[in-house]
Image (cartoon, rainbow, N blue to C red):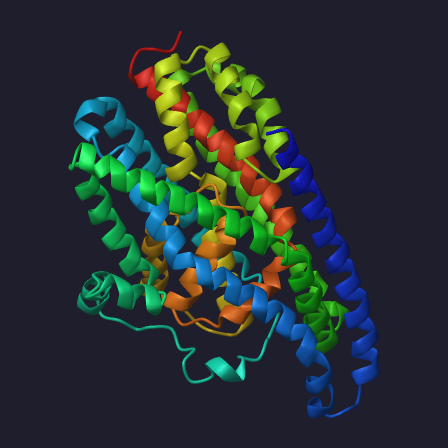
Length: 414
């Protein structure tokens, strides 16, 4: 556990260095390209765009199997809801409510601020003609959720269909008793292999960031950086609003002890912020919640479940990022389509918790679902470490709040 933060810090440092180098080279190339025909510099920038494209393809490669294995294991391990009883029901009620608030807040803020409106990016030629968001009727949307074949859904990266199959498969596996345990252990092992692959792929992120930033700055100039600074500022403002909402909801249940809770979770939240990893704060968070007065049994149940189903900061970011990319390409998404996107994110975000840069994987899947150019994901690679710091700490706070409230509901808060 001690080495993970160091590796995370090194990767973040490399990404920042790559981003600065990409901005510098892009600035030089932008000056060189001034007044020249587009065809002349498209050929020069092609190798740089290739770096980001390879990274995006690697991310897409792991999405479907990762969602399937992790979601099946997560559901199956607590599909025994009868034995969990009322604690499980209350916990999931809080998680679903918190997820909806986080996603909806991101949707409202990104529509209010319009951070991507100033980008004016051309739609990639590869997706021109396939970029228009799906205008499905309610009936078509609902029927599209259910797969006719798992393998067909995986081949086409239809993530929502994979989620539906995984949920049903997970519940069925949990009901198989000892025979089901064999399947759970096997899929758990596969999931860990894919998570290891994800770690390897993320090591390629600095190279992808360098290529992506070089291309963006070479084409658009340094003026585009003002859009990034606005995006970061508006996202962190959203996190503070979300924090205020969570603390107000907590105060309704535990009153003045909310201040004490914040004192206890301050250090775990700082650990998550500095390491870009809410998982790095998990052991310390368990200790501090028990010191705060939460029952050990409730903590050991709610907190691990929260790390799979209650990622408040990450979920707000997902709507923020997905709609930002759509705005950057000038793609208008109607209210009904945005609500559909919110529901998709509500489901897909539950399947890949604990994955490094998990939000990027979810956003990639969402862009594909709504036919938004996936190349837009490269716009966020350079600033993702800065955003991830806030996401991770908010995830820690959200899970702490949930644990404390469930303890209060169970009259087990000392």
